[in-house]
Image 1: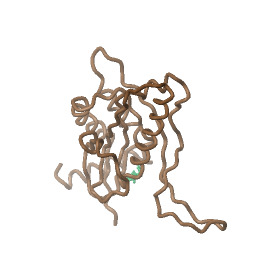
Image 2: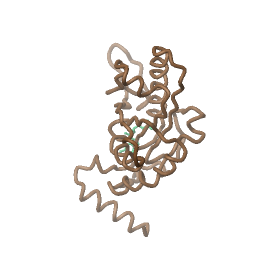
Image 3: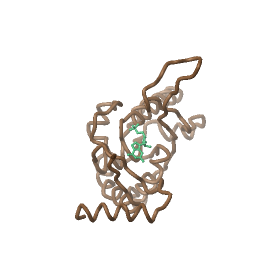
Image 4: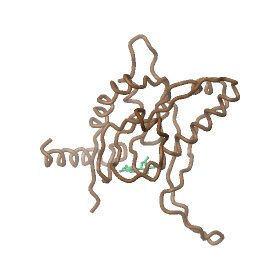
Length: 208
Ligand code: 5GP
């Protein structure tokens, strides 16, 4: 049986709170890009803890990505390994100059809930870098955009996706590293009281 890790809203809140000082010390993001749907709630909570007195809130943009399995059809028998293709369900609107200016030359924190196989994060970084480079060239700017990553959980396992060395070397932060178990997030729960009691029972068992 696959082990399940029940994470409550308070757990998520506290993981964001604990990570914020390090994010502020090491990176000071000027913009967050939340990968939907799991990155939305952590990004919003993080924003409160990253807020500096006298400065405006850090803006949050959203992108929607989903890993899917390409099924064989009659015309094409090629079979993809499960969960290796990423599709965009929502993307940045880089058509408006204001939005381009928001990205070019900025420190951008990409936020997601979990780094599992790393396929999604690899895709997000590559595609964002490509789009930002295009926007930069159009603007005729020589400013550099820096990306960092924050996830609530990183699963300690062999990864399929690869992230740039400059991100892995000091600009990648996981609030918690866990084993290769299934994490149940509160926003997916159909019965939040049951979810919370499963979490409490597991914590009690571990003596937490
Ligand atoms: P990846 O394998 O690309 O790192 O993760 C892809 C996506 O699969 C994640 O963004 C997340 O939505 C989903 N996922 C992977 N592992 C888990 C997990 O343990 N729990 C939940 N709820 N979603 C997961």
